[in-house]
Image (cartoon, rainbow, N blue to C red):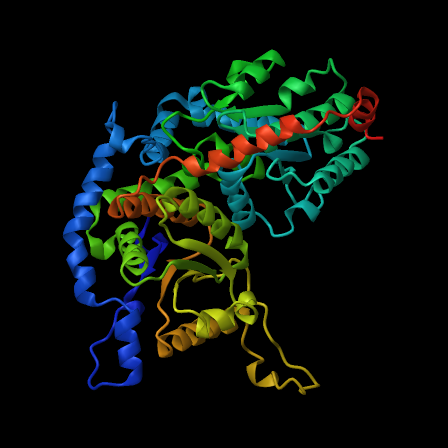
Length: 501
């Protein structure tokens, strides 16, 4: 369990309608667009019942049809991974993950992570939030042996993929040199997702050219992360990759809930992130969810407040306002989590990720004075990792900043947060704060587990199954049909394309 000063919190009191001393236009607006404290209080009994339901779902072996699909394995996974690692060490799933990650770190200078949706968004969020902002541009010594990380297989942009392939071809010339070797982590639970499957074929072809078709590096530097059965697992075995080097996504964990499986942990370990601290943070949040009362339970608070705002106050647009630029990809990860989990039955809030104060100069006008269909959740990190960048004195003061010479960017950020929330309050625009004491593996683990748990709770509150994504399958089916209707290239042109001509 974390120490109190390591715990993240959800502060929502600002969007509760105050009891006015007298009628004012602002008090009327706040009564219309904020939540009454009584309504939040009324939710407690229902929230406890839903928490009990979600807790019980963890144990169901044969769920009834109305609960299917049920993929609640993510809830207990962090603690199970840690317990298994303590008992079995290198033979555990976490031990295998760390072993494979070490092999990639020790033998490559570049790793390409192939995946789409939940198969890459969590890893990208961890990379952006916990690694150096310019990690790939640092020389090897400053990266302390951690490979450069690239993400692909999440789009169908021909030129973008070709340019990454060109980068590898032009910077990796000698496979005998570790600083010029590169590897691939390919992630797909089913193995049949077109974007990732096509990318894997392209990058494996590039590896065949670079290492040679009989090189052992092909078996050592390609790591599949996939379901217990499926096309990718079959392909990996056919390519000679050992079963012990294929990481498994459990059946009872859906893609967007899989960040604490090999899907997120393997890339994180390759990046040099402390994955055990991530899991400890996630496990601590699960414990708080299951045991703490509403007043100390950020999962229940976040789920209840955002549910009421969406269902009863008509705030159908949910803005994640990121006040730390490094957390932007966490916002994109939550976009998918919310959209695929609750965007069903013609319902569900529409998520938007904004980075403040950057986007205050673009979307800020709409958030302040536009349509009243939004609730804003600020994501705030209280303590900066590095020493402050100070304004400082200057012999030229036309910008009139000398008055702030002893203040740093953290001071300006804090003033901006307070000023923005004050402006929202004075215009009856509801906003709340997710507060991280600092940016670390432990706090990010808490945050991601909190948002996953809250999404499940919100789904159960709304009678929407938070698992499965049937709507995504429609485009896949149509894409395959349309692709089959496209005439094939002549053999000569295909050969030239594979050779890069």
